[in-house]
Structure formats: structure tokens, C-alpha cells
Length: 167
Image (cartoon, rainbow, N blue to C red; front, side):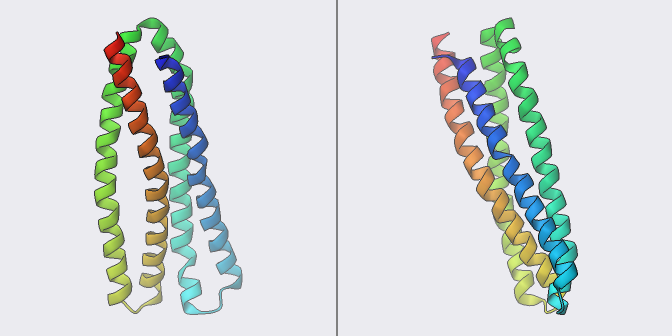
């Protein structure tokens, strides 16, 4: 099994999926602009700032992940050629850390969604409701994309384990 190919394929898959953060960010910003021009009700106007903030956050997340994964692809081959076993070991450590972060994400984000849902129930002001609904939408998008990324990195980990045993 070629672990360099597996690592590169994993990183390329990440590069293909992270632009979805940017895409959703642009959609949120477009919604904000649209509501700014067309929103007539208090609730419609209340969505302008929360959707703008969510859009900017998603673009920042996507851009950071995209840059990180693109730079990672270019460094894989050099790191592997320098010392293949050290490459596998370093990747195992990085993947383990990432999987622990995902475990935290999959516990914290649902709690944040619950808090936002409770705010919708217990507040009556348009700004709080719009902010809560926007937060829930953004968090669901993050969960969806991260859920797919978690599955990819878990598969990559299993390939790393096989490669580690072969060496």
C-alpha cells in the first residue's frame, strides 16, 4: 500500500470539501445583502448582521482550511522521501489529535444548537431570534461538513495503521 498516495488523496479530498465553507459563507453574505435591500419587517432586518457575521466566519474557516490543506499536499512528498517511517508516525500523531478535536466538536456544537433553540423559545425580540436561527443554520452546516471530514480522516487513520504495521 502506498501511504504517500493515501495521504495525498486524503488531503486532495479535503481541498475539494473545504470550499463548501466558503460557498455557504458567500450564500450567507448574499442573504444578508438581499435582506438589507429587500427586508421590510423587523425580523427580516434583524437577520442582516447575523447572516453577515456567519458568512464571514464561514469564509474565514474555509479559507484557513483550504490554505492548510494545499500547503500540506506539497509537503507530503518531501516529508515522506526524507523519512517514510517518521512521516507515518507524524501523520498518526496529527490524525489522532484531529480526531480528538472532532470528538469535542461533535459534543460542543450540538450543545450550542440546543442553547440557540432555547433562545428562540424564550426570547421574543427579532434580533435574538434571527441570531439564534442563523447560528443554528451555520452550526448545522459545520456539523455536516465536519462529519464528512471526520469519516475521511478516520479512513485515512486506518490506512496509516496498516502502513505502520508494514514497516
